[in-house]
Image (tube, rainbow, N blue to C red; front, side, top):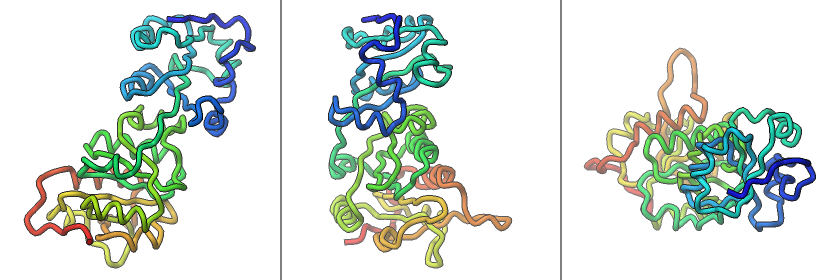
Length: 279
């Protein structure tokens, strides 16, 4: 490991940690795609296992034995080491998770590439809450969906809060930004996906009814809390699906709803008589 003791906050390379806002990190000119922050040993390990490249690490000395095995392929990456007070002065908060890594953002693959071998995908339309995005990715990973597509205005899955809430699963679930609906719908059609919109709608069928005859390939679409899905998303859907509720509650938090729906549509052989994708 290339250990760099922190004896001054003016050391070259520490700037990534002094401007921890995600907007600032995305604007870092080197590399072109910017950076994101991986927080904790577990999340850093998932980032490296996903093939992401570290620019540097920041940690207290007692975490060196835990981090060293992760960096065998990156002997020249600087590992900045300081005491708790110094690191808190630099970052502006207490690093109770032990380590941070400034990671190069990987390039996003085209939508067609991300969904080509998938049978269950989730589409997030304009969800701006980073906690919800992270929680949905965790549900996707845990319940066996294959990929996530996000709209151009959806929150960034590599935002530090999203990464943390997801327990690093945003680094292992394939995802990309999709084009606007007409073009995205064409790509989904060509790939054979049945688009199911999770929404409060008079035309909606219950999740139980939908799950009784599952299509072979499903794109589950969900929108932001409050506004829900756009008219364009509903128009693009083959089915509109609702989770039946009780006691006057009309809906679940979008992250909770994603977990319920993903469990119901978990990948099984397509049922006889299942609806097909729109052509």
